[in-house]
Image (cartoon, rainbow, N blue to C red; front, side, top):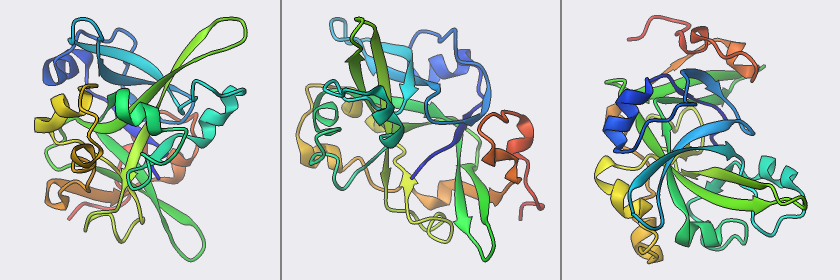
Length: 226
């Protein structure tokens, strides 16, 4: 699964790279956690222009009775997303890019789990494959939420964890965001593990285990990188 990640890049750079209007609420983050608002990009239905928007992490299906279900739906498995009632409609019609520049995963060791920070070697921002949904509470308030997609690990991630988030190739952003593209086979082709040779991973402090700790120290390596 993917349960924590980072987005430290200023919004002007994100807007230019992902071709959307600036996000006024997107501040540098070092320990983004479920239930928080996260920076995403989706298509506006009428203009087909890209919209930058903050969505709640943890997808709440439109039919849900209790929004707490979102805490159980922070990730969607690529292998079964089209079969799950919670994700099936969003996968077909409501896909988004979740903006990031690194993520954390925990490797099981003898006495504890060691957190690792994973990012691109050139430190550039990237986009997770995301799904989004609208839910309306009994008082009529609309909550827009999202989930991150996960897939099998690449060679870098295999020693750390048995899953990794789906990172969309920049050349495929348009196809992933296009709600008119509903062919499952073509969408599934976008959901494989990202090339390991472009990425780096290193152990970091247990400070990241505390979701309320959002500080540059979260990404500092425990040992010198090789």
